[in-house]
Image (cartoon, rainbow, N blue to C red; front, side, top):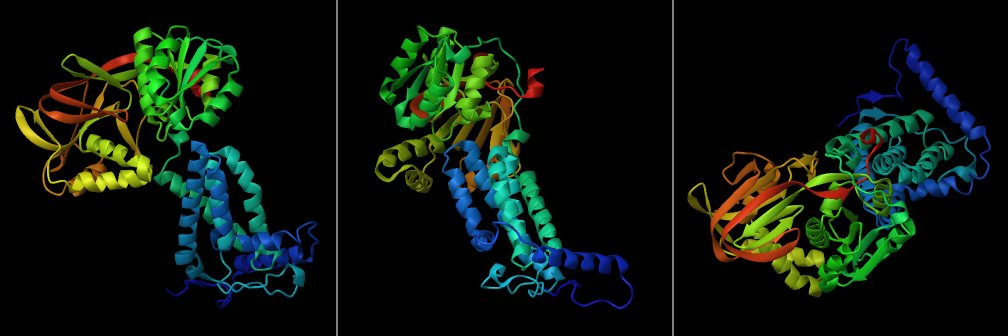
Length: 500
């Protein structure tokens, strides 16, 4: 690709505006070179070198993610995604579209100059673009972490002028491009703050100063030690009961007998058990995410102990729907999803291997083993016709896509079961991927979707697996899925406009 604009070759004729801007740029560069920057001499050249190839920002992303909060991990990922888009744009379009020589180093003191001078064209500054992209991406997801990263990003951008490798306009253009890349990433994958679930229907729940009257059962197998410690600091009068998974059910029953508000800290399975107890005892539920995925808590906008403690102390709560499955005289509830077919088999196979090789490797192995099996895991009667199925998924509430991101629920009280079916046939992996990519399409050779308040499956074969909120059970015969509208009161923090 040949450059479209060459700033080093002046075209014939008068170009007053361009000439003035270039002259001003040179004077600003020379002014910066003549100035003494206190404390910058031992720092800025090293900082500039550390940003080569994005090393500084990858290190910063690892440090942010190490804080182990969901918001921080998302901020780190968004920062790196923004940096990648900015770098791709700079290298494919920016440097090739405008040719500009690097500044002459004569005015720059030797001690400031980089040992290795860049050989690419000067406009725009790739380092500035990466710095601005990473900092803006982080700030869009987490303003607190953005405030930490911003001074470093600003210093990297300024170091490019300080070391004499860029004109000021190169840095400004690079920074603008980097910030634009971060907003472009946000357009493709919106932040959680952009998709705030409605705070309706509002529910009356007791405000508990310092957590007085709250009893929280924490599943110690979910890695909740840090969360429990932080919750005790935030709500010093709350009672916290820590127990192993086998004792969670009994501990919840005991806690419900003496609590004004029942709390739970754990994964989606523990939250499901707590919701069942809260429903039977007529208690509000307080959820602190402590598992791997934490779908229900995150859809409530509860990400950590600060969100939960604020809602509990202010009495901010909503009513949410509860899904229920019935098989003969047996009943169970689900807050997130209920599914039959491939997914329950994958969960059971994963659980067989996870304690030996770890969670993610076990999940990959389980997917390979289940999808390679030459049989349909589910046969059910739909519309008076018996059909082989790969998967039947029912979500408690409608799942929406967030740009290119996986779906999430915007309304936890919409009265709907979001039912997706992947029909049986050859090549299950391709069918499942096609269904996942299609989203909520209503017509597809492999995929069907419908939103209902009640669904009945007949003729389910004995031994068929049903998964609900990460738990697995066996079902047979007639299976009924239905909604319990606005059945559960749950604490959730409300934003400023939702409190009015």
